[in-house]
Image (cartoon, rainbow, N blue to C red):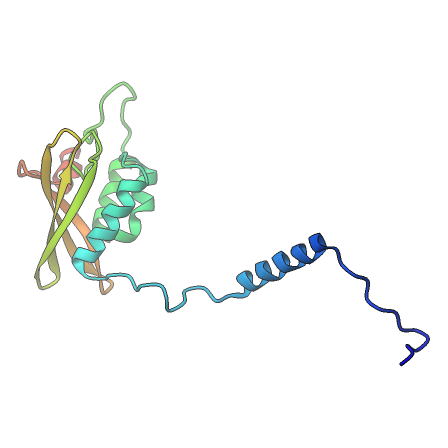
Length: 176
């Protein structure tokens, strides 16, 4: 069989060119793959699941109490607690004074805990309480009680109660 006048065989590609073509094809397939496939586990929307997700995020994304950290945690906070935090940060403060909340109000500490363990939820209507036991490298362990409320059909953190009987919302209000 003789090729027609305008036909030419395809040039042979080098092994390197074939490898680049294979990488390009794999990259294009990866970009075209659907996101959020069934292989991903659905989020745990129970009260304990929300607290577990919050503290997992909190432990790995900086625990300083700042407007930025509150903003990054907004999806877990009740609208009322979020408004109280924003009001707290909106108040002018002398730069040379220690702020009323000096530390992490979600762990009731200035030193960040090494680990945390989320307990079971106690639910009564639209309120739930979940214990979180925090542990430090020196062996010290403290349990805080995270209070959640239903907001827009989802559990949201409304307060944190400390072992000494105080709470996060009390600290926010004490500055009024």
